[in-house]
Amino acid sequence: MNDPSYAFSKQLEGVSVEEALDKVTEALKANGFGVLTKIDVRETLKKKIDVDFRPYVILGACNPKLAHRALQGDPSIGLLLPCNVVVQEAEGGALVSFADPKAMFELVPDAPIEEVATEARRLLQNARDQL
Image (cartoon, rainbow, N blue to C red; front, top):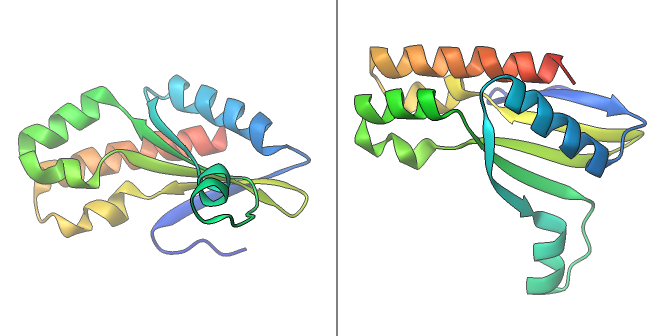
C-alpha cells in the first residue's frame, strides 16, 4: 500500500480496530497529543443512511502546546486543526493513517506555522513508529 502525499500509515497485522485505537491513543499521549474527537464512521453511516461499512474511526488529535503556537501565528489555522488519525479495518488487521501536518499546513505561507507543522509531523511519526 502506498500512502497518499498527505498521509503516513502503518499496518498492524493481527490487530483489531479496537486494539489499534487503544495503541494509537497511548502512542499519541506519549507524544503530547490528546484525542479531542472520535468519529465512528461505520456507526454514523449505518444510522444516517443505512449503509454497512467496515470499521473506520477518525480521531481528532491535538497537542495543546503546538496548537497554541499555531493559533498565535494565524488565528484562522483552527480550520486545519486538529490532526486527524484514521484507524480502519484492513486485510489482516488494522491500518492506522496520520494526516501529515506538513502537507496540511502547506496552505499557510508562514515560517512559524511551518515550524509547528514540522514538529507536529515529527511527533506524529514517532507515535506511528511506536505502534
